[in-house]
Length: 120
Image (cartoon, rainbow, N blue to C red):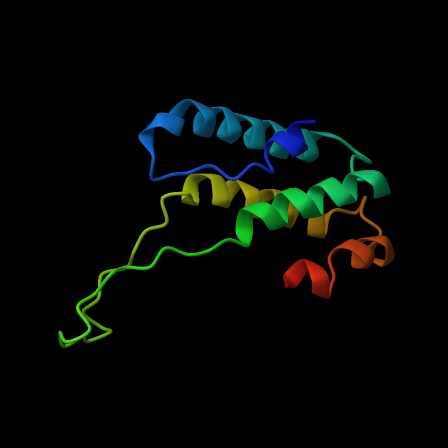
């Protein structure tokens, strides 16, 4: 159920979602802590939820910056754009890393879920 709640992608450009974003961040941290402290927590039925949650968060449209097409642009001078959702994404990536390296995950079973369709 917590995994399902973390599948929802929130709008980080809108301050009115601050409470929902913090609740999601706390839930993500709880999930990571649970995975860190629990043996045999990844079963086959949970893998579907893991892939859905990770996929919905990390595979998303990136923001584009509107630039004047006539202005000279030097890529080395461009300031990096910081992703506003990074505090959440960092936790999602941490969780996925724990999933991938877990001794509880059978690679043959995980391959059925983390496949080409997942990447597309």
